[in-house]
Length: 332
Image (tube, rainbow, N blue to C red; front, side, top):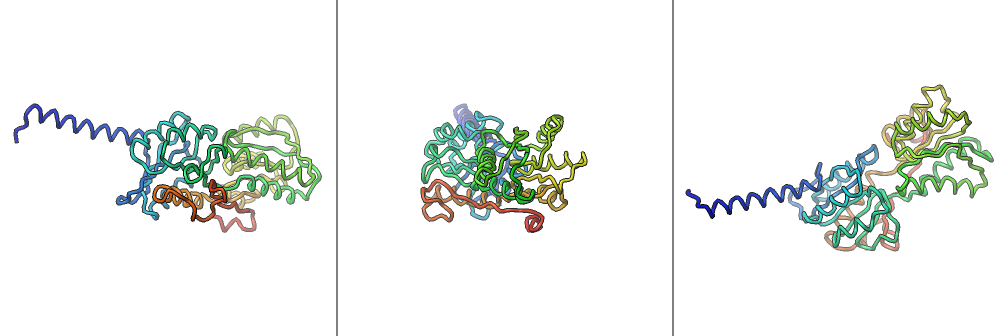
């Protein structure tokens, strides 16, 4: 068939439009999908780069998207707020029905919501200030973080024989992350309420990272201060600390190293006696509820009949669970 100049120009225009659409989708940084190809509900997930827990969460989101029959696209890990804003903008322009977001910085929630416009956001694992939440539009699926620190504090106090005072090391996650703030605050709160003098001989942030935790422990040990326990806001840091102390001959049956998340490595270390305690944060539970909530907001516009929703309609809490040597096999 012979094509004239106008026909050629039309073909070029159509190809350009197709390529532009492809670029737009790529702009979302999609790195994977757990989807039902026939689904009319499209959900986009945006988050920082993965660590042990975040990978479990991604796996749960993908698995539950498939079982719920929705399309889920997973963005590349965002290293900055600007990258996350761009992902959300691209997701809106690409016609997604809902966004699941683990914010790079929870204090930027308003910026993320303005970018999302009419698209609902389900925040997962990280909780923005309540000021930025809105019933049936901007909601949270997470675990009540104060419980995690309380469980840690309770375990350590009992393990040490309920002393009147404790000298301890505290390694925090990302300073702006609500989990790091709440888990740390609740430890001090628990001891104050029980009349225990908690003396933080070293308190710093290792950003959820095992290597950074080891670097900080090396700095701390050079101060020659004694310590009774090490509290870590997550298992990755606790595993790093446990390795560091074990290699230097510390008796970890007498010095509790405690974490949060009950990751595979954290549970293995408890089984081996290198860690004493962790708190199971259900990545599978959070992933399931986040997909369910996002789908319901996209299709019904309301979460009124969803299990676990708080009375104000802003939060869906997935409970924490205590893990020690007596039950760790149940989590492995």
